[in-house]
Amino acid sequence: MNTLNADLHCHSVVSDGTLTPEELAQRAKAQGVELWSLTDHDEIGGQARAAAAAAACGLDYLTGVEISVTFLHQTVHIVGLGFDADNAQLHRGLQQTRGGRSQRAQEMATDLARVGIKGAFEGALKYAGNPDLISRTHFARFLVETGVCKDTYEVFRKYLTEGKPGFVAHRWASLKDAVHWITQAGGMAVIAHPARYKFSANEELALFIEFKALGGKGVEVVTGSHSAAECVSYTETALEFGLAASRGSDFHSPAESRTELGSLPALPGQLTPVWQLLAERIQHARAPARV
Ligand code: AMP
Ligand code: MN
Ligand code: MN
Ligand code: MN
Image (cartoon, rainbow, N blue to C red; front, side):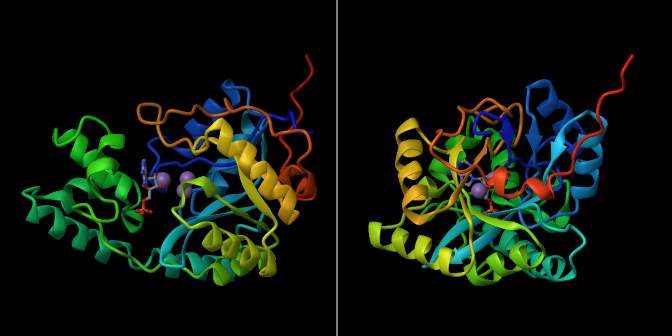
């Protein structure tokens, strides 16, 4: 069960990835993924396409989303898996979460103009497959295109992050709302890439305690954002808090992503995989026709 090649975190052109849901399904299949989820930021408009493409190429599928949350003045990402993609409350909540992105992007461009980088709003928008979902990744692509930085990793070291040009503080959904929207739609809430946050030990403890109390059930242990040591550390956290464990590459683009779909190590054996608890929510691919 733990050795299943599940990849339950990636992005398409519906948010800040560069491949379509169909291209991702085919790539996941070719990379040996056995259970897949498309988890676009704050948007489930790609779910029907992803599920259909998964079925067509023989991949089992779980619905997915990655919700932006503000917790203790930092941005935390909560992945939702296995929800009903037609749920009205989830749709409304995500629409509300996406709402401030355009205004924020204008403010980011104004701040970049102050350091001499002109036209960033229009430049970033050109990369946004979904104009409602303009994100820092689209700005990063514009800064690479114009030669300001050599790759998107350099962009996030020099720009768009706290204290650097182009950063605009933003208030996303509350942890309570995000967990509630996912759970009431029949899905499971999972803390994404916990090692990425810059919390103190006490703040991180508060995140896990509050998440559990709100009905959160899982944490990403094996992700493209974790080192081997961080994977060991969050294995212990998952066991300590009685959370199921997830696995996902966070793949965005063949040109930009360091972690390929389906290429991560297996989940450590002592963990309960999220897909065990979500067995009834998996959309099974058609069995291949016998010849
Ligand atoms: P946003 O939702 O607009 O704040 O954009 C967040 C996205 O930017 C993330 O999902 C990543 O794709 C990308 N990102 C943020 N920080 C970094 C970073 N330090 N390195 C690489 N990509 C990052
Ligand atoms: Mn992203
Ligand atoms: Mn994330
Ligand atoms: Mn992600």
